Image (cartoon, rainbow, N blue to C red; front, top):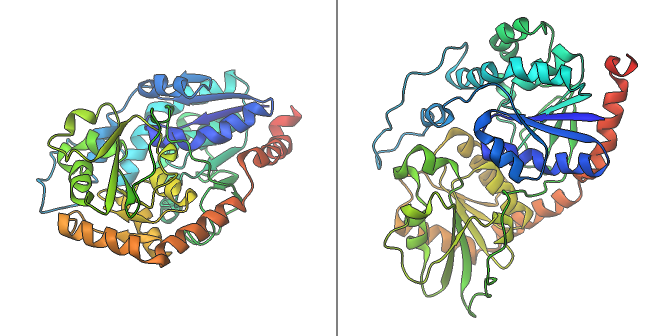
Length: 393
């Protein structure tokens, strides 16, 4: 079986596909990950076969337009949006689909793919699958924040579908793979395959030397702000301020950053442990709390470790995932303006001292581990491909 995975050029979206892609490859199937040229090198670093399709879109400029308003930082200058139909978020997804769909359709046909697996905002995926006459499988990377847009997607994407001979297609595919534990996902009514969340936070090595356990009587707090916000606006990269606010006699802070973010770290207290380009899941053993921006990968990785979260969301999808953390009792959420040093310390201490958020996070971890693994899903994908009309040809 040949399985074509696809995403637009955003690292966290790519990372969400990697565990299943490796599971399929380990089962003996051919796998190819296709995306815009800008993420080709990062895809190669996952160890999986990669292909570039279409052309790059200025994703940072598009995402910058969705920063949540704040009086604490100036509003970013946002260039004019791309052409497209529907609400503003749909215009962004349309721009990415438009840039990829023609080449992706050609690749699906020429490579003789049997399935297309796509993350939910890579809407070129279901169009290319329909054009090639093969099933499309939607792979969520967190809470399904597009479920409310389901009815409008066919009309928004109709020009791209017609251009590629796929007039009839379902933007939600034949089935959706869902890595969210029971109780965390929003209510949905479409066919789903539950899967255990397996963290992949990018290629990288564990800290060297390994982090020593915190001193007796001290809690360990891991601070990370993902990859996105520093690309959009340095004023919204709040990790250094959060780390500085949280360190103290009873709290050890580990600040996780990328090499690109490292120059933004200035005047940090000496007792903050800074690690560079270390995958988040390798830092969480021994931690007591994660303080973050609320990205899906960070949230699910923390819950996979059974850790509560203190979140400061600054993008709508971060707010959506933060709301679910709050709803299940696994953490606290502050707006950017509420996240003063004093409030961060107060909320972090309350989360560390109260047992309820930790218990909620550990319960979600247990529910994650009750779900089928990515390897278990391979037989489901095989059966889906075998039922396809294309399999009879």
